[in-house]
Image (tube, rainbow, N blue to C red; front, side, top):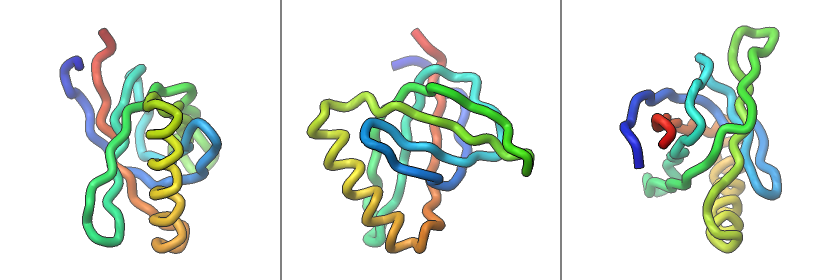
Length: 103
């Protein structure tokens, strides 16, 4: 739980075994986030994560790494669906990031 305090939009940058990296326009100062993606059928995929890093790139955008906090089965299912969305969106997949004030 915790108070929702920040919602920003970004793009999926890369998907790894236990996490996802995204590019957003501002720095995230929250430990916990909820990632929301809409698939091709406008079904919202949501998963909670922990921000591992957030660093400014040369372009002034922020490359942010998020470790997924679901069970390994949930993470795997989520990543497969994200990967499919990512391919469908031709690597231009929007993602919403909701920041929570940490407990």
